[in-house]
Length: 378
Ligand code: MG
Image (cartoon, rainbow, N blue to C red; front, top):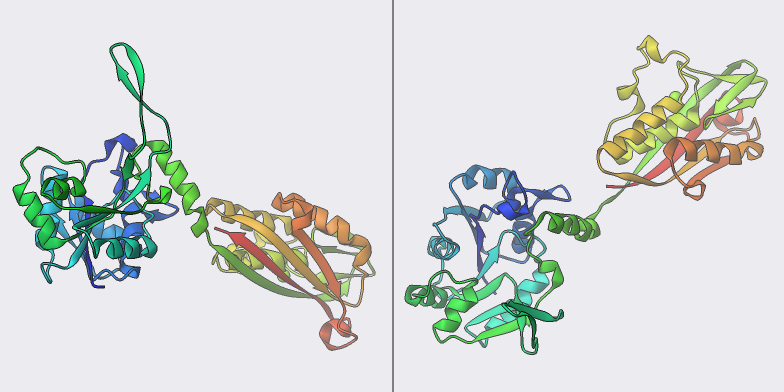
């Protein structure tokens, strides 16, 4: 069913704390307004009008960059005037369903929209509402009294109406500022139906609400994976560094740093997971500063970048490919070393080894190769 949307984003929202109004702030890296617009476009909105205050035009452009199917309208002095300005800015059939939505409720979904449009088929308005679960108290001059909660609902948004019906109800409204749009339709003799509400349709009002929204948005956290590969040539020496552990050996790996191919592959895997290039971008081999450097530094740097981006490493898995030295006696020490550098429990750090049955450069003993995978949650 074709429908349009008015999103009221003209409010100052100062209760959520100083600074930008709440609809322009980010939750899980995405502007509060954009959460709604993304979802409503995905739900099939034909047109979205975002009603903004005096500074809102540029903020909306920035928040909704790259999206089409929306435009702004200038809001009024009150929410009711802003809603009416938005309704009048919509083109298209006058009796088409329109959803009126608060910009500060970011977690609307296509399922909410579908339920509202279905409920609207047999009513003049449809609202998502939740039964009141807490005991209600009224404070009076003599203290508290308890108010029965039977039959009481908490109304949320978006709320659905026929556009001409809602405009007619607003035209007839004379009672001051309504607290939602359904109230105006009710006063105009309209029947408003209840569709299932959802705690996730919460309105972000206070600073604590943003903490909860971040956690709710956790469902939208992204798991990312990166892989790395490295190889170094064997040369004369008496010990080799692998996965941060020194192993006595009759050869060593040749390289600019300590040539720890395990750490290099793993560093690249982590950089790959977060889209941060490769180890050479961060530690150019032309830079004498890294000559003979302990590769622990490289891995620490990559892990630091993950943390700086708000991510965390879930697990890592390294495979060393060589005929000699035998890796097995050193595997536990390697896992412990990687776990210490990455600050991970050891069961999330894997080190494995294989030979290539005498084939290829590792099989001929010309060099050692390492592969790694890192999984990161952003
Ligand atoms: Mg290397």
